[in-house]
Image (tube, rainbow, N blue to C red; front, side, top):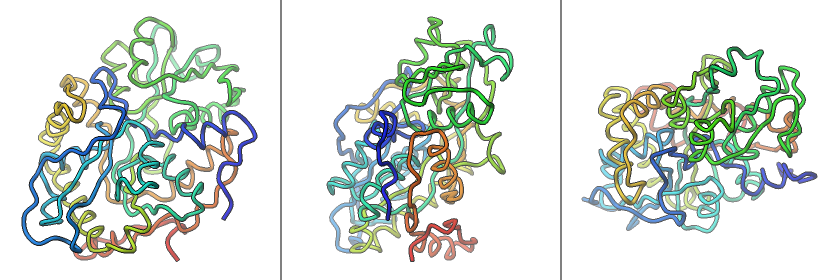
Length: 374
């Protein structure tokens, strides 16, 4: 298997090491962050027989809207119910590379994470450390602009557009979009006919308010925060994808844990499917459940304003389908943008347990787009 990122530039080195930060990874805008070091937090008590004889399953995710499934479950306890006496131990992260590092080190067993770190974690370990076992969320990324400076997509030339980090998922999407529109931009420096400015999600709203940037290609809730600051959504990224769907959050597992504890992995997937069902049936309550989780000092300690929360939640769609074809396409975008050597993603998915769960629910199987376990 070939490594995905054999660096020949600063951009490729950063992509491989840190810029794999996905989508809303740790970005809570004005609502703040959790601690930089992951901490285990417990919300619902374990009860009943242990699954696979395990005392606990350690689960990583981010305290944000695009990780709605585990954030809602933190309040509702579907995962814990499925695991019985095996305790769910959540670990809160702020960045994709940190979660992948924890997965590789065996600090966590299962994680909710975006496509870029999943790709990089897989290829850098030559497929030895992780598998994508399910989907979680689609959408929730927009280009928000200052309407006084940018009135249409034709007005981007000469403007300064922010993304959360060099080589992260939104950075790749913006660079690919600009390339397709014929704009010349250096992927390393962000300099060109359109300036690409890399800044943490939590800082982007202030820079936007102060006029330091003209717009930003960002995930939720940062996008909704910019709209609340007077910005206008010029482009919802879902408009660029077939059926308006693209992966923003996946479920990954340590390969060894999957091999040794398939019953526990299956229980987590059952809990995820049930949580997503509940979210779809109770969107208003689900949004408030996310905010209740955010209010927990172990997550961020601060709630989102209802205006931002509701807007952000509407823009994110929970899904059990990992939307594998879109992950493959996102990897191709990184290659075309000049940030990544062509990756070998064969075998990155193992959807057998998810499809078993879906079959038991009377639902059709999901597809691995040719990248499934052999």
